[in-house]
Length: 528
Image (cartoon, rainbow, N blue to C red):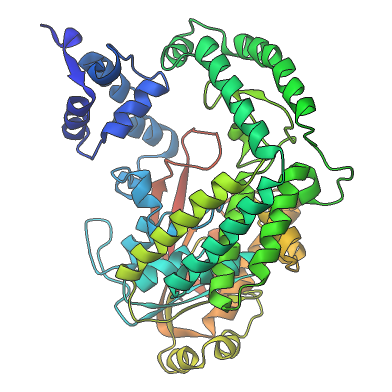
């Protein structure tokens, strides 16, 4: 038998691929390749097999080749070791890092690389030790704080967004998990009772039955995607035809069950992006959350609700990260290769994320160290760090005043890329947080023109100048940025600092759909 003819079971394929790639490839990874048409399935049910040659062809299409191509495009100084491509997604989103989605966050392995005590041919010295205090003046979702906690270091986060600060603080809080679970159970029970008076569950069940029959007939798995990948089917044309064909079935069910697809008015984000039925459920759960007496429990359950409603926005699966137009009917989904539906109830995601959150918090409990972490809400350009810290954690404030902050690990916002408040607009609407869009540095709405870049340089400089007041004399600062406009040398100079090293890394897994070659630089700054 030639190599081209050699067959693997799914288990054999995962074992072979693990050796071939020198990283763990699970049976689920192989099943994914089959399901999404990357390789062909031979046989049925438990006898499913794949061709070894197809696996080789697939892995050769990017493995190794990608490194060469990216270095050709981005420069030979690209440090592939900092791609962390040996880690599975479950590892780059480990424990509390995935408590809530957040655009533009860095992976924990990157933080760990610079904070921990190892050295290698790229990182030639140790910058931080256990007991040090790390500052992140652009805390975002709190990745630096979490990794500091895991590594036995104290950490202070600062973020202009009150909701971002909530996410970060929820990740590092120690909970009474029994109380959290009890409150989740109470809310879930009352939500099910609330839904029992509605036609929505029955409507969704019937719609799913009709979709199952339709998709099995016209989008068989994995044959359909396999043919699409090899241009045997015109996906755009075929998908549009079948989307149109299913629509009368959907409309008939909507009428039969008296489903209200849109609110009468669209004054807020919640009005625009949620069906009336979901909006009612959100409000019901929100009122139930408000009744929770334990403050920490109330906050983490609020995060579960926020994560839930984010997944229930009236959008296509492909556009979840970047919203386009609200979807109120069934549609052809290029991501899943079939006709999909918008959501009409939050129950499924509420139960899924509730369970997931408890598991992640319990796992992190085993890793956390007896150290202090706090995220402050404020403007890093002007905030009195120690004064505000004293309000939140007096014990930690005393430690910080005596030890001073050893350094910074942060990813400042990129100029003209993301509106950080807008990505969580639903949460600001629901929880009533005050928005501070006008205080964001480098927001999307200001663009990337000359004035925007000057404003960005000034903003980051002011942050560094303010933070310097609280740093130890021998500080180390690491800033992660895609500095395509070469602004950071000016920022360093204006801040009275010098760039002593640069680490250029490929970014392999981005939130957005653009899968082109992309890199970011970790600037190492020290006192001038």
